[in-house]
Length: 346
Image 1 (cartoon, rainbow, N blue to C red):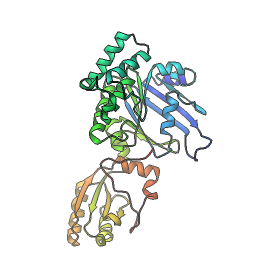
Image 2: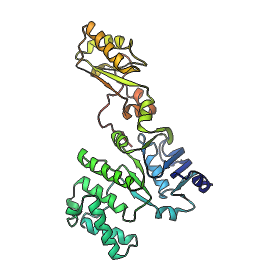
Image 3: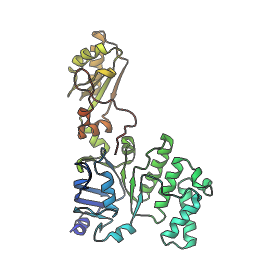
Image 4: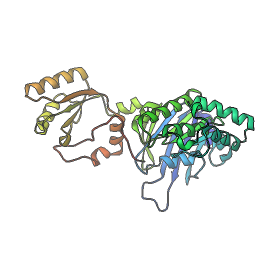
């Protein structure tokens, strides 16, 4: 029984065992196919995956909005099917789009949500004021929400989900469409929730978001978990450090690859189109000095040479096989160039 398993895992706020869900008219690989998950109480778990991997399906099942075809799950110690009502009493859900009323002010929205959650009128008003202060919205409390920025709306949406403080909060792509400043405001709000004891399951399109927020990351492909661990553990899965070499002349790419292989601890990845060479190394300082010296001896002057750790972008692309499917034309295997805020589509 899932309740017995949840009891045995006393530190887990969310447990899923072998969840399956298929959709009659959906493409193959959509839904869940034996999904397992365990989220420790008081932590943030980031759920990542490509389009159709099953992230939103998992959230909908765990929040009792959708019934699985098979498997078991518990949230806050209660079975999501047998005790759905008790689960709903203990969770909050923030969807992809703000669910607040644009005509009402921020305070009016929160009071309304409080009353809908059966709070007495006085308590609903006091709770609204507490949350407006907590999410830095007090100065805009009486302004119509239609005039709020995207970040303000998202913070108000989070506040509304916390009118009755839930032990577990599901947050489905909270910063989609927000600018970087608004995104960081939402990150700070989520972190504050966790610091106060709430467990958060977060789905996101932004790999940097998972890296910043998540204590643990679970990666999905075709409804199955393909990797899980802390951000650092997942980055280490690709092995060691990386040296990125950016060349001024594409004609130097092949010669650079040959030189790089002398110091590499794994496969050297060449993207001739962007004049970049990626070199995995195990002895970072020694390899960097040797590579730069050898390039100088060969008369090759790179535009830039960078020593770094693998990124979550690369982990994700490697584990889902996208690093090979998206390879462009060039001499040898290409890998997409990592960016500061990698993004994947759900």
